[in-house]
Length: 164
Image (cartoon, rainbow, N blue to C red; front, side, top):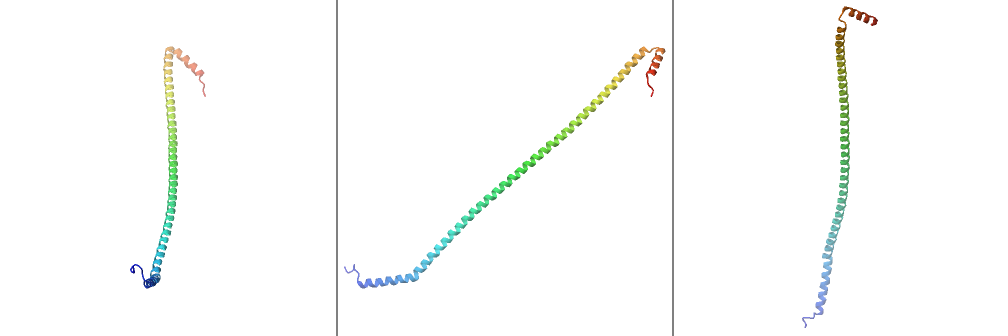
């Protein structure tokens, strides 16, 4: 059983070796390991901060993009409204011009009709007067076949005529 139970000297030297090993590790290994862990922790923290900044910038960019989109929509609506107004104005001007032209054509047509009517009335009057003269000639020839009757008619007409 001597093999299983250690001796006091062995425990003493193992303890001193362990303590020396701990002191050496503390001086040479723990500080660099802790510094590396702290540096790693610091770099992770900075990465998280930069990720948070990037996230905030993305939110800001999305907000700006939304503003730009809204402004573009407003501009599009304004342009569409102006285009509708111009279209309506052009249509109303065209209708007004068409009405003016129609009125002019109606006036010209009325005047032409009036002129044709006047010409027809003059022509009818001329025809009536010609017919009246022809009828009067026929009647006078029939009644004034003799020279005495013709002289009587001439004297009667001269008395009735007023001399200016």
